[in-house]
Image (cartoon, rainbow, N blue to C red; front, side, top):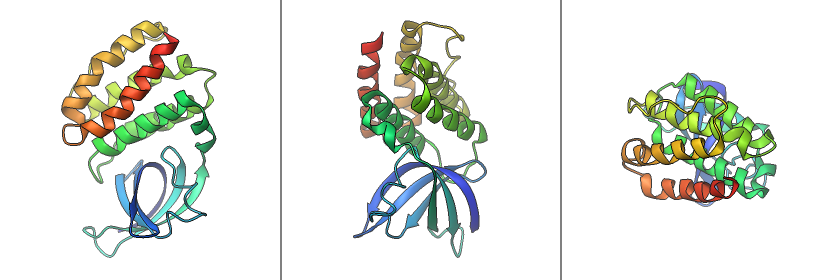
Length: 200
């Protein structure tokens, strides 16, 4: 296994003293876990932030081996972590993606949707600009995984309608997409939902 591709950092877990296991979403290879030496060091720590886009070079001797990765930053979303609402959105959508998607199955539409949603969260003037995209992304993820999810509100729906759809989709995500790891991940969604409630 050897490839180089742009990837979205979705989750980072410490491994040993200085390394990390990172979960990366790529367009063609899907979700890939990889070992990054020195991932907790001064140079790579700000690169391996969930939501960042990186160029990842992965190498493994066999398909069954955890690949080693070399990582270079392409787009940093770290500056937006200082704002409570964007920070909660970035934490939720990356945690959801990392926990829900199986390894090495390509979901190009989800990759494109996540890229667009991350950009919207970071650059829209307010949450009203990206909330419809968040609802659409959750519904798309459920559909791509074969769980239905229904249609999101039509374009131009008000915040109340978007939040109502968000509340309807939540139990479906917990029951199906996050059946094995839902508790901790859904806690991130609860934080986001509470903060979104303040704009309604």
